[in-house]
Image 1 (cartoon, rainbow, N blue to C red):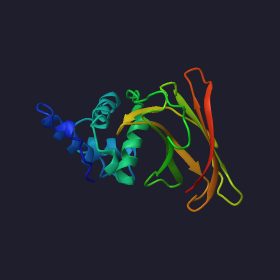
Image 2 (tube, helix red, strand yellow):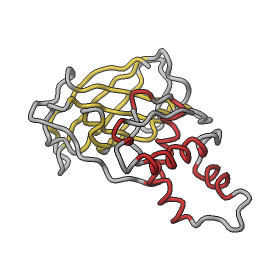
Image 3 (cartoon, rainbow, N blue to C red):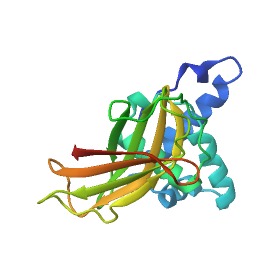
Length: 210
C-alpha cells in the first residue's frame, strides 16, 4: 500500500519520524484481512518477547496520527486506518465550522466499504461544509431500507465528530452492517444534526442509493 503524506510531514525536523512511521504503517498493512490481533502478531513475530498491549496501542496511535492525504486513500488503506481508529479511540481533531444552518446542499453522505470483512460493512460519514454552524456536536443517522432493499442490523447510529479534514467537518461511525450487499438498492435516510445536549438543530430527510 502506498499512503501519501501531506506536505506538512516534510517540514524540517519531521521527515525522519514521518519516514519511520510511514514505513511502519506500510508494513503492518500487509496483513490481510487487517485486524488488530493479526497486526500485533506480525509485529511480535521472531521477537524474544511480545510487545505489551499498552506499548502496541501507543505505537498505533503514533502511526494513526500521521497526516495523510485522505483524498488519495484506497478502500483497503481506509479500512486499515478505520480498524486502527476503532481500536485506539482517538480524540476528535478541532472542527472547522461557521454559522450556516445545515441543509442538504452543505451536508454530504459518504459510505466506504470495509475491505476484507466477511459481512457487508461500511463506514458512514456525514461531511459538513466548513461554513456550517459550530453548534453541531454529533449526528444521529437513521437508515431504513425501501421495499426490497437488504435489511440493516442497526438502523439508528450516532456519528461522533472525527474532526476537520480537508477543510470539511467530518462525522463518522464504524460500522453500518447490512444483511447482504446493498449495492444498487435505495434507502430512506434521516440526518439529525444535534447540539451538545442532544437537541436537534435540524433533521434532514433524503435517500441514498448504494
